[in-house]
Image 1 (cartoon, rainbow, N blue to C red):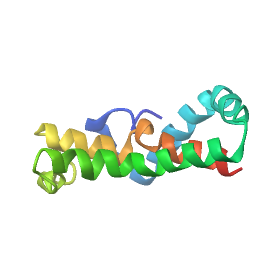
Image 2: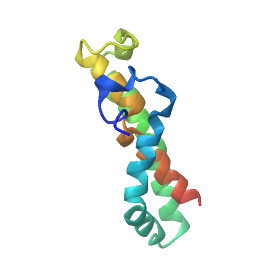
Image 3: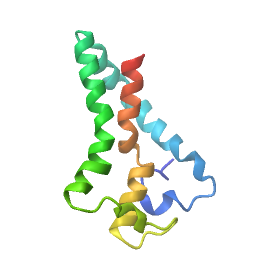
Image 4: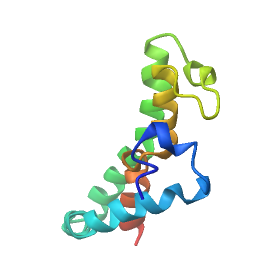
Length: 112
């Protein structure tokens, strides 16, 4: 269950599509505190505000920050299975690491 946690393993496994199982294990471990936090939101405005912030998070990380450095196409340097550069590690991290999908899990809690 560690293939999503380690960028040098994620694209070199036999069953690459199963990487999300390691994410689910992490989310399962964090479910109670996340659910407690989400269930304590007082009104629909707080829920909607948090949802908008979570929807904006991927844009911030993948578009706005790279645009501020002048390189929107930084991820195109990555070749599948390669871990030769920091760009390779960052692409694999964004594609597979559980932290990069936590916002989707929390959005699911908010919608439920």
